[in-house]
Length: 179
Image 1: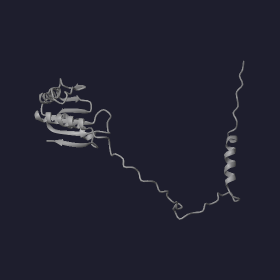
Image 2: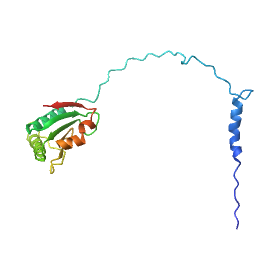
Image 3: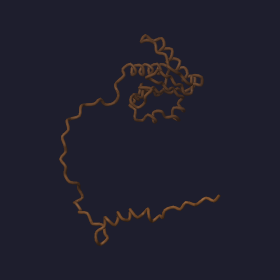
Image 4: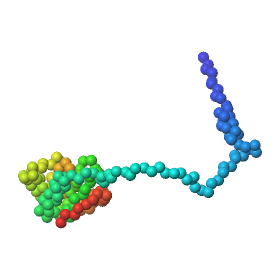
């Protein structure tokens, strides 16, 4: 059985309404009428006066407990001769922490010793004993991460710290150099 081929409508039929619209907008001579030119500025409008905006708090709220914990971790790292200890204030920039503590050590044994000192001293402290939520890298000692919830400590070998450049990644964060 043979099937019939459907024929499509002519293409010019689809263009006819658009052609009619163009012709309707043209003047008698077939040209589009010119618009009246202004001096290059919009007409002046009166601005409605709004009430003054209430003072809003700049940035996220201060967390004194987290800041104290970050400073305590920084001091414990300095006890083990950590180099270039920096506290980064990342409140409002990340959802998982308020402060980062970044420090360097000269050898993998020193980095591991710094991490163990922080863990032991915080666990036995009078302030309530802090235990890390998680730790990473204690076995190798090249990059140790100690997660205390609102404070995360990153302990690096000096070369790896320069390679990963966390301070550059968080360049917008306020920083406190701990001496």
